[in-house]
Amino acid sequence: MKIRILGVPLDLGQERRGVDMGPSAIRAAGLNAALKGLGHQVEDAGNLHVKLAEEQPFGDRRAKYLNEIADTCQEVAERVRQTLEEGLFPLSLGGDHSIAIGTLAGVSKFHRDRNQAIGCLWIDAHGDMNTPETSSSGNVHGMPFAAVLGLGPDALTKILGFCPKVLAKDCVLVGARDLDARERRQIRHSGINVFTMRDIDEQGMRAVMQKSVELALRDTAGFAVSLDMDVVDPAEAPGVGTAVPGGMTFREAHLAMEIIADSKGMVSLEIVEVNPILDTLNRTAALAVGLASSAFGKKIL
Image (cartoon, rainbow, N blue to C red; front, side, top):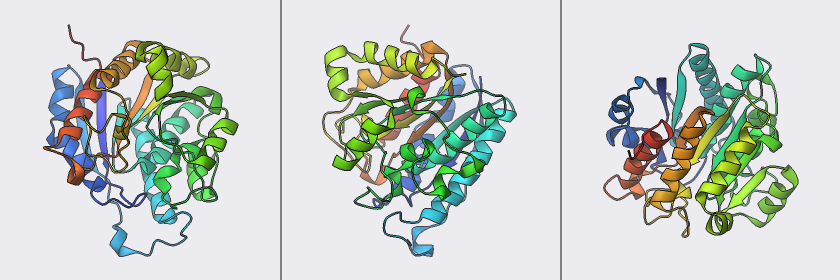
């Protein structure tokens, strides 16, 4: 596989500084070498330029830095679409989860131009299904899943000129364990498929991921994977901005990625919310490299 890495050091979508260093931390943990070691061709396109929070006012308290985030996501979308047009696989490194609005827009546009739909596996402790009207913080990193489904301000939902980017029936939220009260109602009404940590506890990761992949592939040309590192338990991934106890174990997270690789249905991957300031000895970035390796075909034997 030919993989193009794109760093998006966006930290405007949340309030814990340091996540802009996530792409560098993941690279420093050996991402490029790990992927090349699996036999893939790797092209590192470097990082996009992203405006600093200190450079501008945050604007509307219900959606802070909305225009700046939208501008970055527009550029991400164009770069991801171009990557696919050139026959390469897009691997995006965040930054906060706001970048998913751009990633999904680019992947969706590429397939839309070919009369194809895509699915989405959103692997996250949180729902990211808020809108400015429901968010208690106004942080856009809690809104990207809603945005790609067409919910929220036009600046986020209509990047590249169309919405929604994905249909709810083709989307699966995996690993949720920390949802806002109003967000819960939005998730129920959205029509997406959800497997919470309780589902993983009761059914096992193998069954949950097999069902998730089946749902995301049922009526699509493939699925985008959006991996928020806070889905993993903080004992294994301490370097995230919104850590919540009770997450996936090391092996559960790897099994999820291994099943994704086995499906051969993944059309893009992004890894977000690695914050080296909050990390211990770059453990979370190293885990991100390991999970990416599993998603790209690394096997135990």
